[in-house]
Each structure stands twice: as structure tokens, then as C-alpha cells.
Image 1 (cartoon, rainbow, N blue to C red):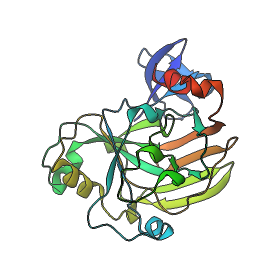
Image 2: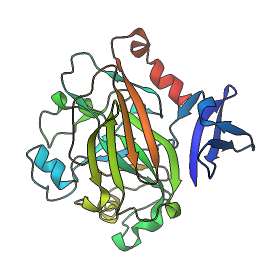
Image 3: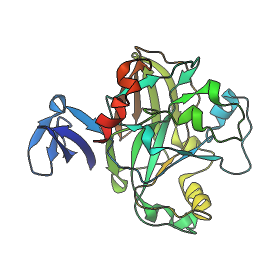
Length: 265
């Protein structure tokens, strides 16, 4: 099933998408047309977010980098997380900001020293993530890209959390990114250099993974600059479409942090 968190009738609610894909049925049984949802919240409240700096060979080639000897990880702050349809703020002084369409794996139970053969037992489901990045702030590949990826609004998630068993083959999902309706990025999870089980085995060997931890599995080739006024739409087969628009970060709303507060209320 596809689960959502949202604001309707003036309050935070949870619900599931109906089979026709036209309405969200709330936990209380009320149906809301998608157009009636006032605010889409991130479908999962992350415990922590662990990103993978490089995991598609074509993306590595795009950046002029080789496959690392082990997964290169970073922590993306929870304060970056926003929902579907929320604004991404373009930071002051940035010259190259881009999207990164990524399959987000949601951990379902505590995991420590998990073998890759058992890794899927620790997954509850999946969602779409946009690991927004300012490339100017990535000075050295092996330094944690905190400033590059940690800005408020740089972690759109959603619109749905999809149960693990409702994704037919997580190792063969196509990813597509559109900017203002133009296809800019396309890839497939079959081309991940480190598989999801390998990532879980590696991370859990030194760090306990907890329920609602989110693993970002990397982005394929096809990065391009996005600007204020652009609409960015990320699609992953079976998971839906995550859409956000870009606003100038010099607005008073951005400076007061309202984008974050509204989405996380």
C-alpha cells in the first residue's frame, strides 16, 4: 500500500492511497481528493538519514570519479526534510544547485551486524528522495558534504511510503527526473554499484540501524542546474512522483525557516 502523511481539515493526518490513485483514505475513513490536500508531509518521520555519495557507475563517470573501495557515506540532517509540493530554497551565493533522484530505503527494525542475505528482513518499505546538492560546496570528495547537502529544504521525501511487499522488484526500478517537463535524468536500480543488502550489511557492521532510519541509495547520471522558478519532478516505478518547486532563498519566508516549520508541524 501507499501511505501518506498530510494536513487536511486543518490537522495532521495519515492515510493510504485508494486503488484508483485518486483519493487518500484517512485513518478515520474519510476520503480526500489529492487536490484537497492542503499540505503534504514527509511520509516518514526519519530517525536518521544516511546518504551514499556515489553508487552509479555512470554518475561516477559524470563526475570524473572511480568506484570507491567501500561505500562512501554521509549523514543528511533531518532539518533538511520537506514533503511533496513544498518549496526548495536556492541558497544565497550558490552557482550550481542540482537534484539527485534516489530510491530511499526505510528501515523497519533494529539492525546490527546484519548479513546481506537477511537484509531485506530489516526493511519496511521505500519512498522517493531528492538529495538536493550545491556542487560548489563539495570541495573534496572524501570530506563530508554537510554544507553541500544539509541546507533546510534540501531533503524532499514522498509523496508516499510504499510497503516493501508491494514493490515487485526493487532491483529493477526506473528513475526519471523532469525539470519543467523536460526529462533530464534517467537510470535504473539494477545499475547500483553497491546493492541494498550490501549497504545494510556494511552500515550495520559499525552502526545500529533503527526503525525509520532512511538510506539514500545514490543517483544516476544526468545532473543539471536548477534555478528559482523551476519545477522538479522525480519519478520511480511503483513509488509515485515527488514534485517540488525552487524559490529564491533570499525571501523573508526562507530566512524565518517557515518552509521547514510548515512541513514538520
